[in-house]
Amino acid sequence: MTTRLPAAGPLSFGTATASYQVEGAVAEDGRGRSIWDTFTERPGAIKDASDGAVACDSYHRFDEDADLLAGLGVDWYRFSIAWPRVLPEGRGRVETRGLDYYDRLVDSLLARGVGPSPTLYHWDLPQALEDAGGWLVRDTAEAFADYAMVVHERLGDRVGLWTTLNEPWCAAYLGYAGGVHAPGRREGGDAHRAAHHLNLAHGLAAARLHEANAGDVGIALNLAPIWPERPEAERVADGVDAVRNRVWLGPLVDGAYDEGLLSVAPVLRDPELVRDGDLELVRGSADWMGINYYTPVRPDLPEGLPAGEAHPEAGAYPGVDPVAFVVREPRTDIGWEVEPRGLEELLVETHRRSGLPLIVTENGAAYADEVVDGPDGRTIDDQDRIDYLRGHIDATERARAAGADVRAYFVWTLLDNFEWAEGYTKTFGIVHVDPDDQTRTPKASYAWFADRVR
Ligand code: FCB
Image (cartoon, rainbow, N blue to C red):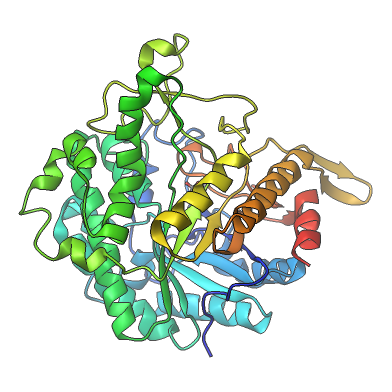
């Protein structure tokens, strides 16, 4: 029996996490180094100078996490697999102890009636592969497909709902253009090479997984509704849409990069980069699509913004110049605008464009929680997070009513965890994690979500 894409019917629910954000145990059981181990050592890269070395210690506490999921009554746990745990050098030698961990995790979930849904790449590229060129080179895509099969061989008897990549936009453009995520490179237009190799990695892995009858293979994209702030910004907004959305949807749906995209990303015309058959391989390779949504994107011209409002994602749209981003109120603690209509529009539009079943693979909010230690123990009354989740689950239901085939909704995230460049300063969890001893305390949003799920 393997877990498969939920059938059309009532929305099913889950929560999501990612390996480097929760596992800790970075030097245990032969795990190799990843680009996030390296990047977090760079002075200034992480807001609180922290790293994922301990994180939520889920490597040792996965049973406790699984109990929390069972307590929620969710159908799914979306977690990611750390490539360097399985292949410490990225290719070649397999580290069985790394696979053993995911084996235990999968069994622990299944024993509690929670469906495991692994993501094969949530940004922790083996450092050895980065040293050989990272996502800027084609070999990395080939190595990814081999790695996918190693994982499938071990888990495929129980797992049938696979995600290849998480948010390749971030991996390519925050990692190789903006420089704010690992590996922290600023390669400008060459970052489009990384995007192509990520598309190829997905296509190669999906083909191999399908050959092995692996079940339902998808990709989790952080597509965004692009809402130009004023008519003068429509041209740059089209460029932003190309680099954020069409660079992924084009290959998946049409087997092509469109002209508008090629004009901002001319390197994608290079036949040495985009080889015959690459885009054909990607077309139709996803059985379903994951949508990670937090906030809409409102492109503007720089002079339209108040002085000093530099957006953290500036620089992450190479070739789209000059562009600025407006963020309206209300905002969460990470500065992202709250706008559930963005999710509704995105789901309807993406289903129309792709015809694929969808899962909201991530949605959630960072708020500065007030932790109260009272006589009856610790409480966190996060009404703001409840409002956010309610608004977005309602938006998902509206999109379904409007025809979008959305099968499931996963909250980001189960646990307060290592939030990349923000370190531990931003908390998205429905469960509080004590930074000193990793004690887990369900927040009010946990109880609310458990109610909503039932
Ligand atoms: C997404 C990431 C996820 C988490 C949320 C807040 O971009 O996929 O790991 O950091 O944002």
